[in-house]
Amino acid sequence: MRLGSKIWFIWFLLALAGFHLAFEIRGLELGIVVFFIALLELNGVDTPRKAFYTGLLLGLLIYSPQLGFFYVIFKLGAVPLWGILSAWLAVFQLISWKALRKFGDVYGSFAVPIFWCAIEYFRSELYYLRFSWLSPGMALSTADWARGWFVWGSYGVGFLLATAAVCMWLGWRAKQGSVVIATLAAGVAMLFLPAAIDRKVETEGRSVSIAGIQFEFAGLAEVLEGLERTRQAAPKAELVVLSEYTFEGPIPERVLRWCRKHQCHLIAGGKESVGQNNFFNTVYVIDPSGNVIFKQGKSVPIQFFRDGLPAPTQEIWNSPWGKIGIAVCYDLSYRRVIDRLVAMGAEALIIPTMDVAEWGKRQHQLHGRMGPMRAREYGLPVFRLCSSGISQIIDANGALLASAPFPGQASIIQGELFLKGSGRIPWDHWLAPACGLLSLIALLHFLVSSRFHVRGKP
Image 1 (tube, helix red, strand yellow):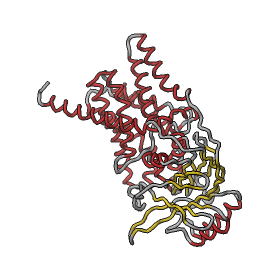
Image 2 (cartoon, rainbow, N blue to C red):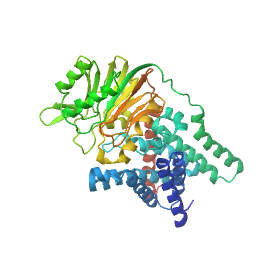
Image 3 (tube, rainbow, N blue to C red):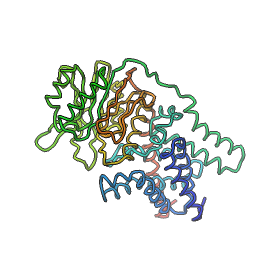
Image 4 (cartoon, helix red, strand yellow):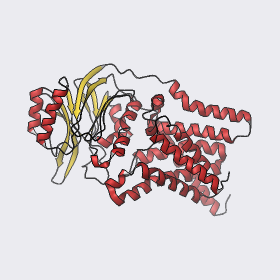
């Protein structure tokens, strides 16, 4: 296959539109399939260099608008970050181009979902600048019809969508009518079979009455006043949650006294000093006697921020209502962090979060997709308490039960969190590393064969 400049431009626009529409318009989440089909067509360019730069340009036009808040946070440092994210799409296009040339349309195209899953997993989990947002799974995270897909996990969703796109692409290009029908039917089945066989997770069970209040950089007096207001708004709350970094150190004595006075459990973020110049970004659990009975540090501090040291361990809080996994803010974006909590038997996830208001509405909206996606993957309820929104109570099927708005300083969220048993580990816990291994083998094959080709050997 070979693309002229006009046809290249049309497919480029379709890839761009498919991706953005999937994230911007509810009901058009399957624009991601159009995105994948267009990427396959764009491999019709005649050199690997053109394939690489096509992916790079497309990535820049995807990530810089979607992640425009990077500029608010990092200023000119946002430009190389957009570039690094775009480079992963460029690498994907390059190795896809190689596979199609080496193995042909049929075998080469079915390597494409493997490459996508491997690259998405690596860029999200396995290197210093790991960043898991704007994945196909994130695009489908709030689509009710897509709930059944998430047994495969967020990386598995990308694998399935890419596979469906490959089937449709091969069917569209096939010359024999029977092949066209078979491949198109396979593509449609890949899209709708997971939804058809979906079984809802039972959400009823032991419950805890939970509440939280959104505070950002509040003083102690303001926090105590907010706790009193939360108590008045939710007098039956057994567990109150405050955000990450509510306090600049351990939990103050006046807050411990508040817990004793109201006979209430409290979860709140603070800092645990390590030497004179460092700390662990820590979430503390205080019981109704005013004692700190559990604490969990942040597993993956945010790059380029003064966010403390990585927590040396992860533990489960054996609460009066069941086993609760606590992760700090952006830890929810990392599957390897949450997988460990679920493997230890977590029955619910509580996520104190600091999302600074000046980062803007778009950042909060994108981060707000992570909770429903994780709930669907693991079949667990999630409570996210954010400093300036969007706080959420999410059931084990990913349904939003309650939320607090952005901007929402001092907004209160309350409801019931149902613990019905431990969650499941999604299938891509094994699929993604397997795709990584297969992709590594393919890359080594490409490198060796290219070297022999340069030397003039068969």
